[in-house]
Length: 545
Image (tube, rainbow, N blue to C red; front, side, top):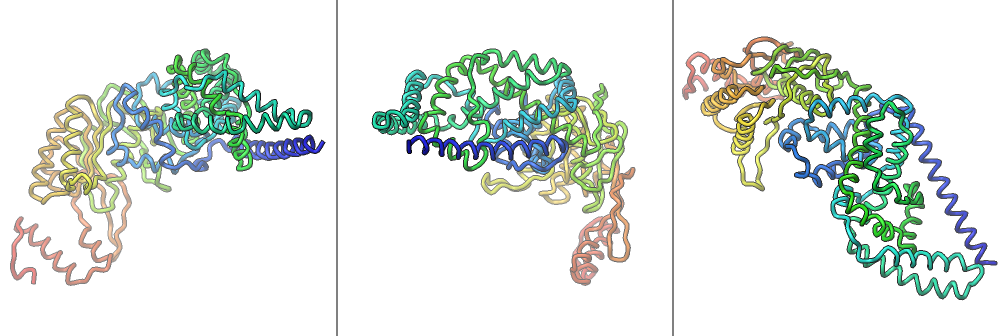
């Protein structure tokens, strides 16, 4: 009788923890469904996002946006700042998606999925939320590596049945049940330990793969016919797994208490090993379908993310044209709280000059970001945005590398060489900020003008920001625009408005004054500038005394 009461008490405690966890999840889900467009609420970190991209690098038959361009545009920071990711699968897929430029067919499918009605949107949020996040999960690796297991499924299932009977028999056959439990427990612990060591890198992904299948099944049934194409693709991918029974035990285990219970059950009942043995053989025969399910679930979460951005930012549908140039109205940088907008018609080769902090780099990044978003989502951060499909390359925020033993200048010329090589192969949008600033003035001007002239002849779109006003005189095939500042006493005022023509102002010496450098330094610097402008040469002499 005591054993029965003890078992009932344990069962009641487990039910309480499960009820508490389910209620908490439902409350969180309700809030997310009521606020589907809120940005920045999820808490994924950098190492959570790049898993699919790094694992599948080389598998996808297209060139990704390279690391230099990715870092220049600060895309990782943008995704982390605006994240509203319901599942770790979705977060990783979104990160991966922004590395690959797509054709108009893919963009059309994404736009359609972005237009989910309220019922479909709530359905998608619910099932992606319950899919959730789980530490240590690497689905692409699991799908690729899953195969035959050294422990047969029938043996693991037999041990599970026997230990279950031992526990259930405690109230009725106490001595025999304890004996059986005492024999089976060390056997199961040993098998779990040895089995876990052999598939350690795949073990965490077993549960998550099953959760993905279950949520995909629900979505295929519950989404409306407005998303019939998506449902058909999902159903086709799910077909090889339709007879696979999926346990619901791990559905609500995010709380600490339920996680402890679940971890112990994995050992006692060999849960993960049984699941792996059951799934791995089937998965090995249907890897393509498993990848398709993973990608479709990721596409659904990408659609929700794009929809949230549309509700919070001013986005327009990008217009793809035959003209190999950029045209935009009301273009802005989405990270700025109160951004200035830019407009330009038929922009192919652009040289942007202006003083320090006047807005040159912001314009470059705003243009490049909308080129990227246009070819990933079909939308741009502007009122109107027209472009031709093309590769995206930049050379902006470069650094020297002690590890590679490369100076800043060597890093620069390697970056520019990759751009020149790519433009010889295909049409590209190229964004270059402060070209060759790592070398002396005379050679910088000479080399920069030669490189930019060569890039201009490739037919690609070349956009350059520079302090070097001399380039405006040398590069005749580039359209000149500039930013200007005004002065109020010792203060410098920027309006960040894009103006026609080359810049004719500088502010470096005034910035020294604003930052508290002595008058003697300021005056001496100014005299040297005036002397150079008059003589076009640098000279030693009393003029500097």
